[in-house]
Length: 301
Image (tube, rainbow, N blue to C red; front, side):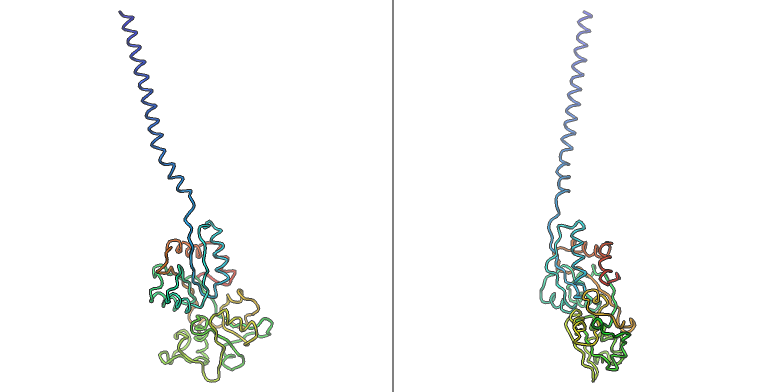
């Protein structure tokens, strides 16, 4: 009887042990199944980002630098981003295009005034606005001209023929502000008695005896000096890097015109505001971008 009892106990113990083993195996299988849904999530993270095409409206003077920056941005881990036909125009023209219904994701202007107008008209998202670059206004002549130390007073004396941008061109506005300090440019009636930084450089006239060549972009203004059409032209320092064929023969005193600042902002109609903001941020924080801007004569604001 004892042997039978002992044998029964052994059978019961073995059965219990087997049941425990099956239970552990079942738990292990359950844990594995619970972990399986994580795999698709990991696969999703490695999937390529959705392709995005950005449209940039930028001041004419940024053309060469922006082309390099856009290429560098794509190469820096943003292969999903492409840039459609970037528009390089005077800041006034870019505003007119937006007002006429043209599409853009990013606007970069060559003056605070032009960006103020874009903001007031509702073309941009004011919360995204940032000052990007500063620049200098210089007097250039054809390379090898032999000119040097050309000053505003020399223009006032009628010594040289000159070219400036028209009212749609911020560089032209800055030039008119500076020329007003020596009597070459006469402000409009609403700015009568003011000169330099205190005027807009728009709505006025050139004093009697002065007939400058006017053009629709700072690039075209530079080309007039480059070709020798005029003795000198008023352009940005960065244009000397952009075009070549001209040399700086004078620097316009900074206290004779408003500070030259390039603001940028995401447009209010952008279909890709997050991606546009990411590009705008990269333009200002990336060491590679900063190197490109500086190589083309732009200093971060």
